[in-house]
Image 1 (spheres, one colour):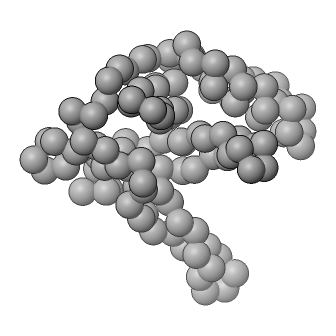
Image 2: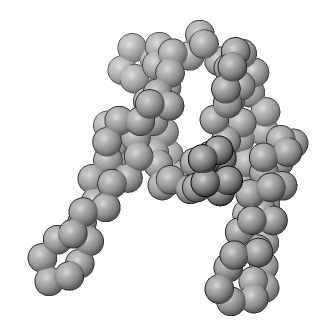
Length: 118
């Protein structure tokens, strides 16, 4: 199931550190099509200094009926903040945008949202 998921990067603002973090994720639909499954990539040290990774269920997994709004495009203020943050802290001068508006999706819930770049 996870192998067929849509790869994406999930962004969130961490209030304690005042930083934006990114999480490599995959989106899947449950077999009964009632739940949006979000899996986060967890890197683990492997043999010979290489990293192996597996996917673990995220707390962002949610029921489809809990989604209140869906927006396509970088309309959320969070995406402009993420973009500025990436460009500011990129070690080399970025020659192209880290992502484009058409790569951005936001899922709105009653008290929180999921911001994705696909």
